[in-house]
Structures are given as C-alpha cells and as structure tokens.
Picture 1: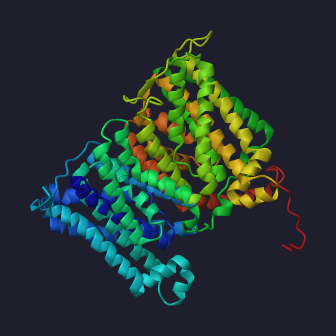
Picture 2: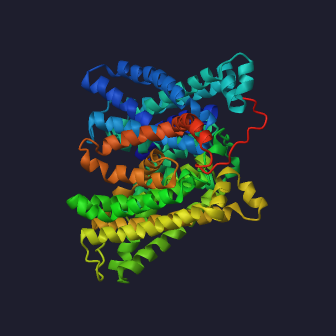
Picture 3: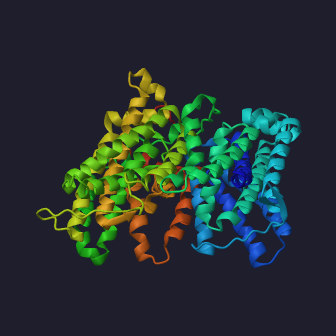
Amino acid sequence: MLPFLVVGLVTGSLYGLSGVGLVLVYRTTGVFNLANGAVAALAAYLFYVLHDEHGLAWPIAGVVCVLGFGVVAGVLLELILRPLTQRSAAMGVIATIGLLLAIEGYLYLQFGNDFLPFPSFLPAGGFDVGGVQISVGNVITFAVPALLTAGLHMLMKYSRAGLAMRGVVNDHRLVALTGVSPDRVRRIAWTVAAAFTGLSGILLAPTINLDANLLSLTVVVSFGAAALGLFKSLPLTYAGGLGLGVVQSVLTKYFVSPPWNAIPASLPFIALLVLLIGVPRMLPRQRAGADQQKAHIAPVSRWRAAPRAIRVAAVAAATAALIAIPWLVGFDLPLYAEAVIFALVFGSLSVLVSDTGQTSLCQGTFVAVGATNLSHFTAGPLHLPWFPGLVLAGLVTVPLGIVVAISAVRLSGIYLTLATFGFAVLMQGLVYPSGLMFGSQLVISVNRPLLGPITGSDTSFYYLALVIVSGSLALIAMMRTGRSGRFLAALFESPHVLTTNGLSPNVVRLAVFSAAAFFAGIAGGLFVTLEGSISGSDYGATTSLLWVAALAFGGRMFLSAALVPAIALAVIPTYLGFFGSNLQMLLFGMGALLVGLGWTDRVNEAASQWFRPHRQQHPIELGEPALHPIGDRR
C-alpha cells in the first residue's frame, strides 16, 4: 500500500494547490475560471520550451515559469476577465470556456497534436522507507504546495492584503472607501492563482507528458478539491485535493480491469457531484450579474416584425436552396447532411443556454446516448425498424435529461455548469465503455434505412434528415414562442414570477431539459446513421465545451444560433483547407470569450444607435407606434 500512498500524496498535493488558486480567484472576484487547466498547460509548455528546447537550467526556468508567468498571466487574466464581475454567471461560463478553447487551440497550432515527451527534471536521488524509494523530487512536489498553501492561508488571515481580499468578496465598494483599489486586490489574487496553477501544471507534466487537452483535464480534478473545500476554504480545498489524490491512487490497486479501472479517474467528479447536489445550501452565494435582465432573447424578434411578404419570400428561397443542395455540391453532400443534423444539436442547446440560462455541458452525452440506443434497438435483439428505433432512442434519452434536471432544481449558475460537466465526465469514463453504450471497443454502427424512395444513398438520407430536423426545429420554435416562451423567459429572469402565477419553476426545468435531451438523442441517431459508425471519443466531455462556444458564436437569434455554428463546424472546414480543428477551437474560443465579455452587446448597441434615426423616420413601416410630438417645440 505504501507506494500508492506516496504517489497519492504527491499528486494530491498538486491537485490541492491548483484548487487553492481556483478558490482564491472565485472568492475574490466571483469568477470561476473553467480555463484553470489551460493556464496550467500554458505554463508547462513554456517550461518545456525554456528547459528542454533551449537548455535553460530547471531552477531558472522554474522561476521564470512560476513567478514571471504568474505575474504576466495574472495581470492579463484580470484585465481580460474584469468585465465578468458585472456579468451573469452564464456569461462567465461562456467566457472562461472560450478562454480554455482559445489557449488549447493555440497550443495545438504551435506545438502540434502529438504528445511531447516531458522528462522529469527534479533530483532523482532520495531515501528508502519501508522498501519504497522516495525521491527528492517527490518530497519537493509534496512539500512546496503544502508550504505555499499554508503561507497563503496565513497571508489571508493576518495581513492587510489578505484582509482586503476578504473584504472584496463581501463588498468591493467598502474596500475602495479605505483607499485600497479593488482592481489591484483582484490582480493580486489572479497573479497568485496563475502562479499556483502554473506550478501544478509543470510538476504534473512529467507523469503524463505534454498534451494540452490531457493536461487541462488532469488539472480539472481540482474542481473536486474546490468542492470539498465548499468553494470558500483554502485549507479544506488543499486537504480535499490531498485526500482525492490518495484515495484515487489507492483505488488503482484494486480496480485494474475495464470498465472498473475508470472509477479512480472519475472519483473527483463523483465527489463534485455529491457535494454540489447534496449540500447546495452550504455553498457560497453567487453574485447576480448586472446584465441578467437583458441577456435573454426578446419575445418579439426582428424576423416576426418584418412584413409578411418578406418572410414568405425568405422562407421560399431558403427552402428552394435546401432542396437544390444535392445537385449543387456533388460529393460533398454528406457534409451538408452533417450540418443539417448539427443544426438540431445547436437548436436544442439554444433552448437551454439562450432561453433559460441553464448552461449545460453534457449535450454531447445526450447525443451519444441517442446514437448508441438506436444501434441497440436496430441491431440488437429487438431488431426494430429504423424509424421506430429513432423515436425510441430519443425517448430513452429523456430520463437522462430528467436526471440532469434534478440537479438543475437544486443548483444554478456555475454550480449547475460544474455538475453537468462532472456528469459528462462520469458518463464518458464509466458508462461509455460498458455494454449499455459503446462497449469496450468504443465503436457502434447503424445501417441506413431502406423504405420506398429512401434507398440509403447520400441524397435520400439528406432529404430524410432535412425533413426530420426541419420538423424538430419547428417544434422547438413553437416551444419558444407564445405562452411556453414566456415561461422560459420567466425562468431565466425571475423564477418567482412563475411561482406567483401558479406554475412551479421545477416543472419548467424538467420540461426544457427533457426536450433538449429528446432532440439531442434524435440528432445522435441521425449522426450514427449518416456516418455508419461512430466512436465514443467523438462525444466526450470536451465536445460539449466546443459546442457551447460555437453556440455563443452563432448569436442570440434562434435560427442563427442553430445554423451558423452548424455550417462553421461541418461545411466551412472542407472549403477552407487551413480551417482545421485546431483553428476552429481557437476561433470559436475567441468568439465565445468576446460574447461572454459583452463585446457583441456593445456592437449591437452601436448598430442600434446608428439605425435609430431610420426607425424614427419610418415608424409605421417597421410596425412601431408613431411618436406624438406633444411638448416638442422643435
């Protein structure tokens, strides 16, 4: 048992250190940095460049990559993410997801997608304890985070800077009255957090080598440590990371065969879910963003305000273009079929994120469940026809949406986001390799339907997908308008409005998550039918991060939110050879970051100001009430 305890203490100390930085920023600024792992990966790559490529001694490279990187990254992060202190929790999630994807995309573009060897650089000599060799590097890796955490705790408790940090958490205006700049206090917190996270990434890299996504997911384990610290206690967060590392390491001794060998890696997310759902009242209260009331989609859009003739002509032109696509694109038709299916994915996700403010990071899981269920229903013992199997695959996904909705009943904001992400990671690690979904090979297949004019060709399946997706999007659009649309808007703005009108907010949450899961399951069935076979790795937890970023890139209007990211993901890369997956990740991440920070709102407001004189000159044509010039002597 001793070797497992040693490994657990070493890795757990790093989990705790990263979690401490995460909690420090959250308690000081109100921003939960989902890009924490990407910051750690950035520091590790910088150390690799200085030490391995340019031969700089590891102590000097370490100082540069911890202290220097911490100061630069802290200042930049505080400057870039400062607007999030006035934004809603949903916008904070979108912005930090965008930052995560942008950093990972940049690292992949710069260093490639292959693993880079990251040899251990700490001293290898050590001493023997009970027959186990403990190196000096192990001692350093355990002791340095412990000392840093203890020093930060003492600083927070007894120093003037620590008092200012705790004061900023409660009321930054009172801190400003004492002559201390709240922005400077937040900058210090970001600097300390970046240094801690960078150090954890550098010390973790020798055990897993260099890969931006893998290193980010490894550091994401600190989310579980932050949950064990109830997102507010630094000592408890470090102790939680230490405990997670030890238990995780010990479990690897007993769970060695698949799928049980995924349990140790999933342990931090199990702890995250249990604590989030089990003790929500003990978690710190989230701040309300100043943009919360204006972040929802207006009930009357410009499309509905346009003249009827223009709308009919636009619909006719779009329908004709969709019907003519098979004769225009040739062998690229499967890409357009994929874009049509993606439109359903983003349409179902838009109802959650844009209409109700429920930021879900497990939509990829719903898609995977729908795909695997269709495979089981059509190729398994049931041997159902394709059409009933597709409907049943969507219906079977609904209970999973209800399970996620139960957490939405007890959680909101960043806590709901973390719960859905933890759920996606657990499904990927524990359920995907089982016989219930993809199996040990992580691959499932489905044959295309053959019925009458549906011959299984690319053209016939394109039209089949077009009909199914168009009908599904029409149902979603109906759900977003009228009385049900007002319920969704009320759930976003103030759930108490629903209560005062005799409708439970929990019923609305269950309904919207169930609908999103159903349509995502239908999309999953269409995906696997189009491709013939898919892999579970294509619909992992990080896939949902990319989808949320792409959704933000599509704007607030329903049609643009469904179509723009679908075309960008499925069609554009084919015609732009340089627009690969890494560049997509970078650009979608930057777009989501700008949306979360409110830059698109400023552009819309500027455009609104520019067009305002035209609306006043022709109020009747735009369907607006004419302004009566009473009292206006001009």
